[in-house]
Image 1 (cartoon, rainbow, N blue to C red):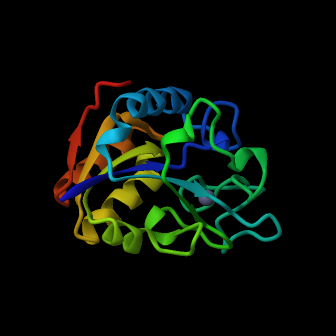
Image 2: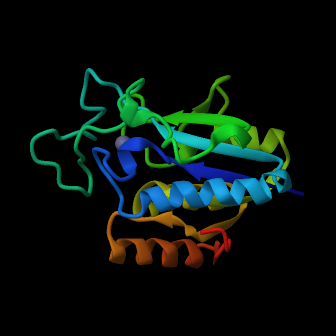
Length: 194
Ligand SMILES: [Zn+2]
């Protein structure tokens, strides 16, 4: 049995000053960096995902530049290759072993919808590495962290969300997301690094 860490979407557009900023996104970026400094060696894989949308289309209705509803449609964010799509510089990625990109032309909340730089799905990567326990951190609790954690549980991994290393768009949906993950069989616990 081995454990992996999934760091979801700690990107400039989701942290303070970004197109779709999450309050305390910078704190999460700093906390993840502190956590990795102490714990990266405990993981068989440290995977970081990025939302990585097309700039030339609305990505299957995911972008609504005029009137996004912030539920199913969003302001333009994380366009591939832009500053907004880059990892937040407060997040030290030196311990990341695998990078996953998702959302090319589609609305993809879960990192399990993405692929690694060699074209592998996240599920196949974790299986290849023997990772059956997955810790999940990052942004945003009520959207991409939620979808990624639930997919990891469906993918038969033992999932733990590190509650002090996530932040959400809105408080109530974020609390509901953690409750949903717990009800699905996941664990919510603090890392102590934030
Ligand atoms: Zn997106």
